[in-house]
Amino acid sequence: MKNSNVLLGILGGVAAGAIAGILLAPDKGSKTRKKIKQKASNIKSDLQTEFDEFIEKMEGKYEQLAEKAEDIKEAAKK
Image (cartoon, rainbow, N blue to C red; front, top):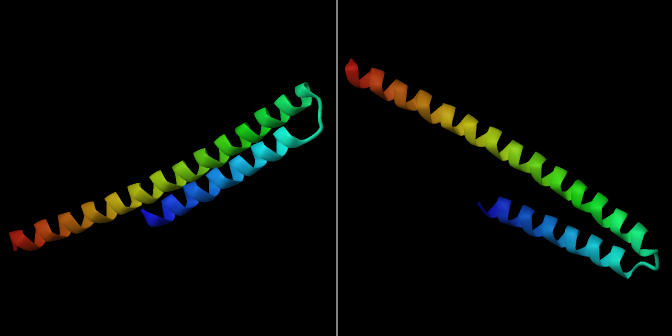
């Protein structure tokens, strides 16, 4: 859990820094909005990737636990 909290903190900091940098840049409003939209899309994509990796990891852990439970069940039958 600590690693995921650290990762979320880092991603949040990066997002806040990127948005602050864009908002303080001397671009026109339309360019700034496009940049914000692109950064938000990138962050969303990164978060989706991290979430998918987390789900895969949890599925792997579940399968390991199911196998161990089946082994225990078989050992108990003997």
